[in-house]
Image (cartoon, rainbow, N blue to C red; front, side, top):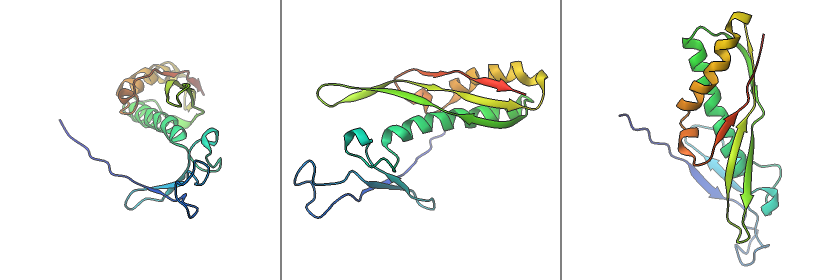
Length: 154
């Protein structure tokens, strides 16, 4: 079994001068960085006093699931003779918030729209979404259902 290690730095940039002296006294802004890659500007969700122009952890979780599925799907298509010409996914996640402020995702649904080269590839292209779901590292790591409703076009 191979082991892969991923490192990330998260640095809070939201100190307005008094730190966390009060709940409304600081911004939720932060930067995610990894050596050799562009920084990702983040904040909390706007519902939790975050900056709407920055990615939230929730955005990144849904995006990670979508991205992982897509990458496995493209790989499986390539090794199974399905030629994908275009792929776009408008993924959506549902998170519930409890009275005490905690919460969790209850599901994420992927809506990939895939364009394949030939009508003869359509059936296999649809089937490979199930295999991609089984292989996705991120989907295998979460404790809620990750659904997918693919559409394949020619």
